[in-house]
Length: 254
Image (cartoon, rainbow, N blue to C red; front, top):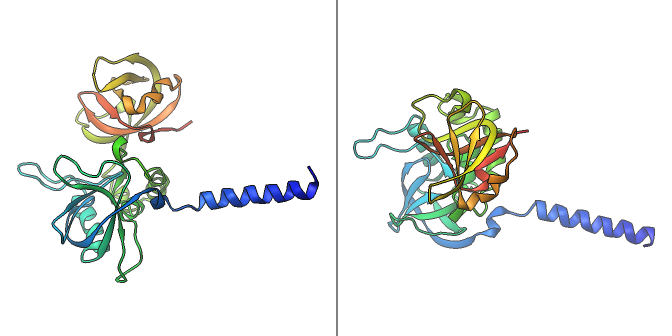
């Protein structure tokens, strides 16, 4: 190929790559309902003036008190963070998979649309400000990947709840006995076995730890992770098993 043509082709390739890199993740989502936010339950749940309850997907904020259950540490701070950004503002829901949960809450990314303030992607903003951590479900995983980098920056800068010691990242070899619910754990992969659990496809052991990573079918590719690989996993922890429900919920640290 002529040198000039090669240079032109290379320039077009770089331009295409730049355009691809700059693509708004929200463009991948389906536009849904609009409404005004009239109530914020906690850092990842709100209500519109239409009566529709909304659960922000891709994120996990400290849970509010419910019946006889106390609110989780950091609940008030995360709630205020979301209230300050969106209470009284007009928003638009964006869907990337399943649209409703069993409680009829909309499962959505939420974007502000009025002139009362800057355009905000609330799911991303809560992660950036340290009011929520990333938690990916396979049914609503679209557009979640960029949130991991935002979380890493918030964690390094000790923003929001990262500054308060609310969210420790546990070493699997020294996991506290009372650790439960949603957790982030680091460890070294140390063997894979099949699982008897009908929801998981394999169990990955961690070196020096009784904790097992229970790999869901939707994350089956993670069963092939080589022994000796240092990983950070996030998921619901119960009875010595940490559920890994999507590939984005396991980061390779090596």
